[in-house]
Image (tube, rainbow over all chains, first blue to last red):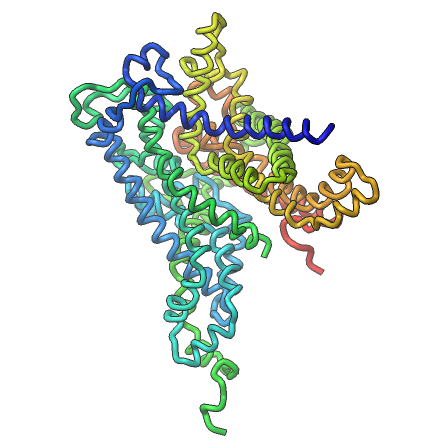
Length: 286
Length: 317
């Protein structure tokens, strides 16, 4: 195949691949802001809005089930990420330091946990026996620590020169000070990327809520999305905030969908920046 | 010798007590993570004893009566629901290994062959994105585009054609699952292959073309051998996961197609256990599934070692 032809073929293939990803986002956003008339004429789906209306967003964000779920999702994501990142960084740091007492057994427990995963039933029964059913902690504690993330962060901490830590010790720094003032500032990139991974995990979690929460007033956004968009249950005016006119159902559904993925799309460029640096792929094989 | 002349870092702690005195703060660092690991990983792992018990919700795991291997009978008695779930799982795994696994390799090779770094970065940015969406979002997007009143069918009917029932159709369910997995994860899966491709020295290709190797031959003799290790590693991991197929993804779409077409082992454990209350039997199915997966990984890894590959962990010398 002559070179120019090959280049054109490559260009076409890659354009199609990118379009397959981008067009759905455009269509969903367009549907969420399209006017009622255009939606009705197009069977509830448009790729390009004739006019721009934020009524659907206003109606779901001014109170009702979606607003409540949004508050819960944001809260669980913030609290969960803070706890996960703290536990992961502390553990990874102690496992990276050769002098830690108890390092070998904990490391073994951690590595074996990757191989032996407990099943769904015993996990559910333990969470139930601890008394976490119908508690928002059930969305955080069982998935708080990812062994994989600990290992990635550990290999990052291992890259910090031992001389640096020794000299801080000579100067009389405590372990906590060394961790806070030397090791963490040197590890901003890995903290950011692991933190974002945890945040995405908490934001996207759906099954934990289905499994552990019977009380629908505790549902996070993904459960609301499942009920009203995937299962197609219509939202009644009582489920929405106070609005003068009820926006069309497709617009409301697509607005819920946009709210469910918008935070991901917003943090994504920051994640992307770190992939380019190979923060993760470099650490995996260690 | 004065005390100050001895660097603290060089002084090795002599007794266990001194070692402890110097290093106990680091042990505190391990505590939060270890508590979570033990409570939500090892305690449930031990909770698998429920597979040998008749679980009574009001007395808890410890006090429920033992029933021996009773709960495991379903695995060998040809129980239709279990056999159906197992068959579906294996068929879906097979289809997805054949269709989904090679896609990111092809895309990575294509991206790697781009001359423009900028074009490469733009495409990567776009195709990684779906990986970070939840399954609920992905399923909702697919419904919106391929569902009964979705874009495709509206367009087909608008042009005088018949609508296609893609969503909620048992006959197309596996194809739907496969296309969703491809849409979500093909881009992201290229990241490992691209990392490996970037380590191939450019001189190998230059030497190849000096010796008159065509681009196809260079691909066959330089690029693919370099990727062999990572492909084998991922196939081993895939084998270990072969009894686990898209749990959330299937659970979300199960109602529309029925269990015959859609039940897999994980959804069977959920539906039969958590929903149906057959705790012991479901735990037994889950336990056997877990054990088989571990055995598959270890066996595959051993085979990889025999063929001189690293596999998941390096060969002990």
